[in-house]
Amino acid sequence: MYCAHEYAHLNLPFALAMDPDNAALIARAAALQTRIADGAPTVPMRLGDEKATNPFLRCNAPAIVAKACGIAGTGGLPETEVFATLRRVRNDFPTAATATVLPRD
Image (cartoon, rainbow, N blue to C red; front, top):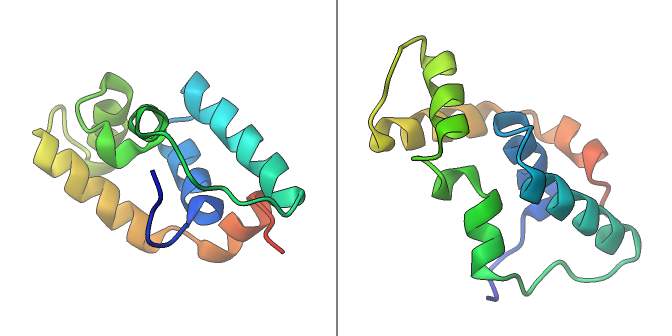
């Protein structure tokens, strides 16, 4: 899939902060770091990879639900509130710090 604009270098560090034990995400981050370091494009991407690594598309995954509940200070949230919690956290996620995790030329 080709996206309109690519933010992997900023979004993957956020995704890793929300889902640090996700093996698919860890592998994707490593692969993208290599591509970015080599000056290669990070798109296109596979929809399956996006579904496996994007926390916004995984609002029903136990690890994401647990993370959102911990942030919200509650024992349970519906998927819509998990998404809203992730969005609030992403809005405040430090962009400067993310740029150093996945360097971009």
